[in-house]
Image 1 (cartoon, rainbow, N blue to C red):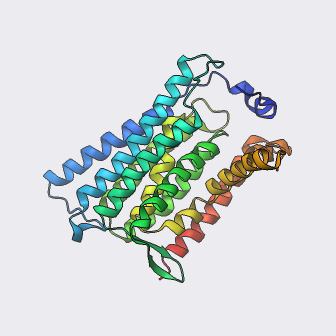
Image 2: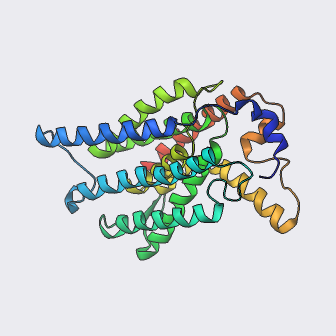
Image 3: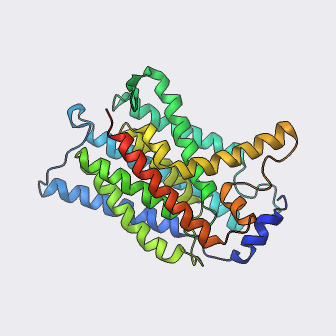
Length: 306
């Protein structure tokens, strides 16, 4: 592996912290969501969905759970390889290009289901209204899913940072799901938030457990799919703005080193740059949460604009 002196200076003392929070959240949320959906059915609890008129309730649930579990399985495979292989092994973890290929396959499957089964072929842009894109929706939606999966993974570098930002974003989407009377999304987000609260209790500085790739890839991709299911992709980009900024700084750094042969920033992503500037880890996290709250309010406002 390439040496990372700045990262090691700030995070070398975290080596040995258990990685398994993502698995626990994934399993707990999936089981509880499935149990509640079955109970709703057998006790005749009214279940409504944005896609009820298309008989798309089952498809919506399928897409939601498939995203949550399939990207989680990919992250779990990567975590297992990292834990049981030596760091200097040629195949330590999944190589970036291999991971991206697998992510692309999963994202294309999900995007195709959104397009073919739920008839989503448009983007809702504030002030411009609904913009139909037809089959082009599939590659565009795939890009959004992959981008958020990796953006979350990049952001998950400080204690409590990614999990706290995710809770803020999910809170905004929970409000939207309630206003749309979408029972599966409202229930799923509620259970997911409950599991995240328990996790964050042990993940705040100093963290006693980490998400791992199993959580990072799954949670980022599922957040993107929730935005796509609600037809609020533009609001997703605003609500998840901190994730977007983290990924953008990391991407710009990679492109600069590849094509300009020099670093654009002394260190990337953004949270590590703030640390290098002298900010203490809790200060970076708290201020990122504040930025996340303001972006969530803005994104929520944009989501209700016709």
